[in-house]
Amino acid sequence: MKYKKLTISCIMSATILGGIGYATYVYSNKTESDEDKTIPLVKQENAVAEVDTIVLHKQVFQKQLLCNGKLVAIRRAELMCPHAGEILKSVTVKNGQRVAAGMLLAVAETRDKRNEVEKAAHDIERARVELQDKLIGLGYDGDVKKVPADVLHRVEVTSGYYSAKYSMKSAKASLSDCQLRAPFSGKIANLVARPHQRGDKFCTLIDDSYFDVEFQVLEAELTSVRIGSRVRVSPFIDESISLIGSVVEINPTIDERGMVTIKARIKNISNKLLDGMNVKVIIENSVPNMLVVPKEAVLERDGYHVVFVYDPNKHRAVWTYVDVLYSNIDCFAITDCSKKDSKIHVGDIVITSGNLNLADDTEVKIADN
Image (cartoon, rainbow, N blue to C red; front, side, top):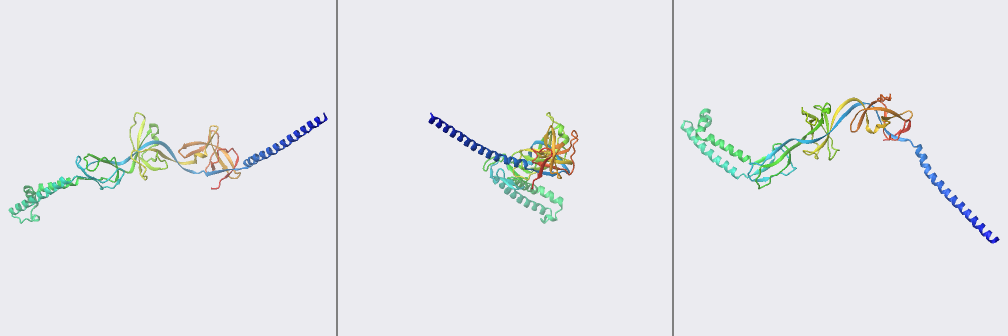
């Protein structure tokens, strides 16, 4: 019995010692882990938020009205084949090709027209001989420079020389018409004609050096648009392209949907713009003497607009209520908040980034740029 008691005591002692060792191990690891987690938190609490700022000053604010529009080339012409219905001898252009004014586009079969020119040349030579004979019969030596104008005219008519000259002129014009030349500089589109085939329509020639942008605004928004209003145009396929133009035409009627059609003109400085392309149109009106901040600078708190003004003496962010007068894609025009009796001034330093988690009187520092 004594032996058994001794054995039990040894087992209980070992168990207790093992438990104490395990507890010591767990406590040691837990303390070390907690310290690892605590150190960053302390550092985070002591970190000062870095912010970007701007200095407020009076400037022109671009009030904007957003619309959808369509590009229309400033000039376009539906070109017909030379001598429509005749076989084309050659076509020298292709779709998308840019051509200069006067450039040869196509040539129709010229054999019959050349024959007409040769016949007209023979007729005029025969008429010239008849003219000379008639002048000699009238007592002139054949030098037309010495013949009075009225006499020469009668002789040209009666000899057939006058008609022969007209026939020659017509034959040369008809031969020239076998060639189709570009009436103005532009781009070839909708080319349907093919060499060695008969046809009527040849192509559409588009002058896209400038575009007219057609868009519509609501009747209520018409007060924001006038002749000369500045517009900014960007194609939906690439909004990084931004072209500046101005309103050139306002249609003086309102359609059944209460819309007014507006036309603006832009210069084409991009090879990505095409006739008929859908674009975004921003109508801009300049409003002078505004305090302008980026949209990121303005936050909403408790149903009011708020900016944080940097106090350079205390290095603190000061919670300041403001009212937004106007907005565009990038900016707000702000002023004092009358309901909160809060003021904003020229020269105030407004925080523009790093302001999402700021509170009033938070210590901040301006980031090094």
